[in-house]
Length: 154
Image 1 (cartoon, rainbow, N blue to C red):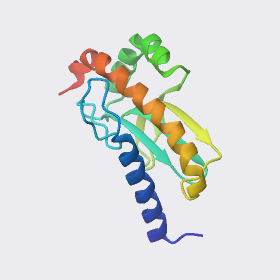
Image 2 (cartoon, rainbow, N blue to C red):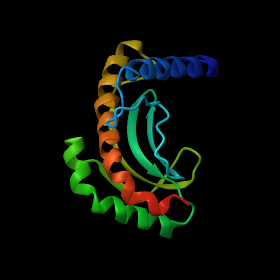
Image 3 (cartoon, helix red, strand yellow):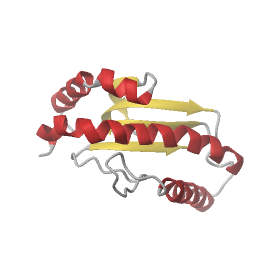
Image 4 (cartoon, rainbow, N blue to C red):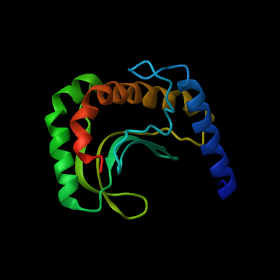
């Protein structure tokens, strides 16, 4: 069992190393990018990655408080679903209402991986292999699709 401080340190070390590893890659636009804290430029819309002792997740998450706004954004993503799926090379789960770790209702398009732990350094290569190609694919998608989401910038 890890102490709270050890958990924090292990997670911080993993994400720092992942960021350093990803820093070797430019965005699809050829720009330097902070992969771990990816900026979409749209308020309440982010690309997120999480990993714990049992489950890893990569997602497009939008967290507008107003469900009708989240529905509009879901409809916009659905317009791009064929393109997104083609770039990702796999089907992801689409959920209009899920609860985040703070109990807040959010919408997500996501993929999970089970059985690998961020607390086992021997699992880190598998975690990186899970996150890296999907995050690069999300960036490729976003470089083109972001213009269709400018209506949500306010």
